[in-house]
Length: 281
Image 1 (cartoon, rainbow, N blue to C red):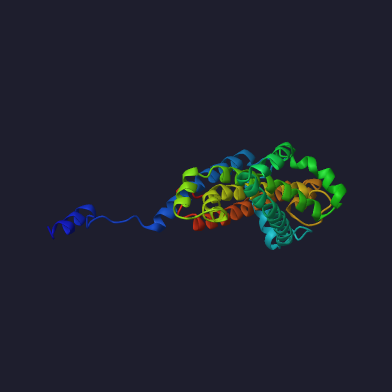
Image 2: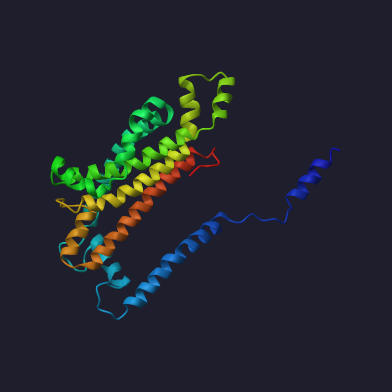
């Protein structure tokens, strides 16, 4: 009987079996993810090759992006100015996003958990939520004037509702059997909120954070197109007025990259905090 366990273990893990290297798995995932954008670049290149239309070829956009970042090619007003515009937009995006989270998270927890707050606040938010963020732009300009404050306000509105709705959904989706199990273990009252409600709703909350930050990057372009001197949206607006389509496309690419990196940061934090959950982001 003593030899049975080692023999069984040897059968379950053959000595010749070799685990797949982690670096190979990462390279494979990167290669698969690169297929679609490479196909788009190829189609774009052949569609614009030798043409002098409104859409520049990818090479021209790459040159414009390099000049925006480092300068030394065109030596115009846009050379080596990307870091200035990017930092301005980053501050407004994360500032408005942080304000939205500071308000949406506690409100979502209260509305999702306490029926009184749900009856008091949810109907109003459901009426205001379908109003497009762009419709708030004239009112924001009246209240905050021309400048970055209007852009931060629009980012705040854009990030607020995805975080709020997903927080409410996460709280209301907590399985009632968890409360029963917590009560049997002596966890009662307010302690259930911190030990049951909050941990169980975190997967949905992180989904809301990802959606809210994504909307924030979409809204910032609109907010920076009116009365703002610096920012990626302002850069797009100036390039449009000068018919610099290659700068517009290069700036759009930068916004996409910054938005992707921002999403990956939240995704990484969520995976660390929710490694225990089968529904982690």
